[in-house]
Amino acid sequence: MNRFDEVCDFLGTMDSAVLAFSGGFDSSYLAEACVRSIEDITAVFVDMPMVSRRQRSEAERIANAIGIPFVVAEIGWEDLPGVEANGEDRCYHCKRAVYSAVRTIAVELGTGNCICGDNYDDLSQNRPGHRAAVELFIFRPLESLKIGRKEIVEHVMSKDWSAGLVKDTCLSTRIPCGTVITDAVLRDIEEWEAFIRNTAGVGQVRFRCYGDSALVQTSPEELDLLRGAWDEIERRAYQKGISLRIDPEGYKGF
Image (cartoon, rainbow, N blue to C red; front, side, top):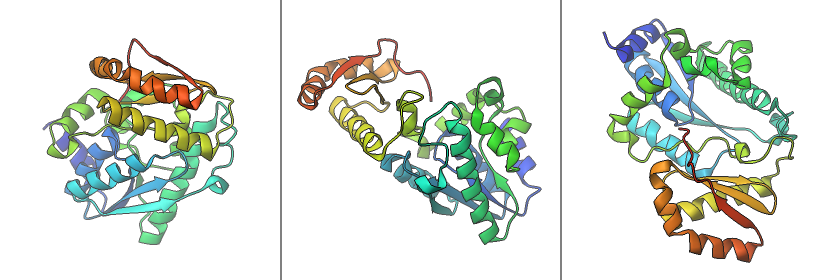
């Protein structure tokens, strides 16, 4: 039995559940397993100020391709105490709000089972959001079965629906810890990333914002594309009164 079939068997003990779904590698892997294994399953995408429009539309596209019912839970700053200040515990407060929203949907749908995509490799990293999953009794099958990132990525990338899948991640990760998060800055980051993506033809972009300067990252494989469009990107930055630099190492995350 391969590892994916093992996950399916593990999930098959449930007759209903909701899945915290971002459209990234981990939750997409689980979504496919859930569709195969759980009769009554729903993917819940939690939309909030730190989520890009692109991430929401991609999540819906992938959910539709996999065939998992998809619902959106909307939360605002009033539901995110402790996040706006952008302290070191920001991710804990954010994940607690996300999982609380997922659990509310679960209650409405008549199930007590909530699942998230925390994987085994996450345990070796500093993941404040993991504590929120534990506190709110969110089921973590990939962690329990010791399924790591390499296995997840290999499986997802073998699927037709994965074409173009790039996890944008939370936009607040582009803002230095301790700098207050505002809607204006988040939308500016989102706009810059869309502009760079379209101008350079890259799939991966991170616009790390430091007030009147920013660090621009793309994947190592796409650095030449970014450099080729740099003059046009810098012209726009000059008009906006900010200075930009490229990360020469490239962004190596997923």
